Length: 396
Image (cartoon, rainbow, N blue to C red; front, side, top):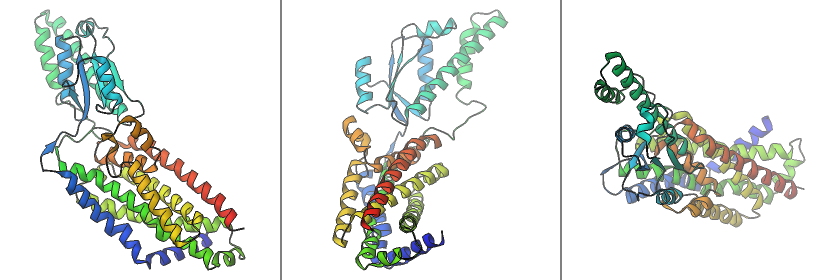
């Protein structure tokens, strides 16, 4: 363990002496975050941050209207009746990513609720999207509240022996749900406070530029490994009791430490700009940790593959442009088609963006980052195994 720490400390001292380190890790990410945020922020007009959900009422009854009212008051979803009013059209819009989901109220729903055997609502969504579970949960909450209000009104009418009391009791029960005695608003949902377009734009540009320049900054780290082989210090190191795995882990620890500190500093800067990373602090920290592990493993692979400083630069900058462009660091993947979104998620940057934006832009809870984190860990293992295999060959 001491040997690993010694190698990591040596690398950090060598990297920090390079002026390009601060340029790529701090100065350029901050500058481009502000540039992209202001460029795409537009005016200071407010926007509704809730997830758009297509809404088709085939019932047209009073209770289906009440259900729509409950959903309209949600802080997570926004019923959108401006969409084409056919199921096939809604399905197509969901598939294209123009709607987060769609809800169809079947014919006879109101009557079935009154009879105590409610018909099932038709829910259209992409199960691969992290927001699907939150939307489905919000619909379930609204429908359960409606059923509860109907039962309460039925009890009031039965106790008072006055059927006319049902409607007034139902109205009162539904109104009470607008301010329930117990509210849970930590695990999921979007902030009900409107956010300016600039803040929403920064919520994309901040993690995007942070990830992009973390990859770009790998060129200084990769150069360390190249110079180590070039000046034959690696061969001398291998004549000691230090194993190849310890050497590899030492370099990896240095890269991870540098990138993780960069993430913490840029997250702090983003928080100052009202990018709410601290809305769910543990989730943001977990995504930052997984992203740093992944990028460091990629840097280790680049350093092992490169045979010269020129190759280290090329091998660092090409992944930066390709992975950042595909992964939505420049343009949100939500603005592209489903095919490009699927291709984009080949890039680990897309998963890291999903994790960060689920917290700062989509307002989802801790559970929403678990899938992106798992994907990043998977990439970390892949990159590290490839680096170890290649390192074994170049050090023989």
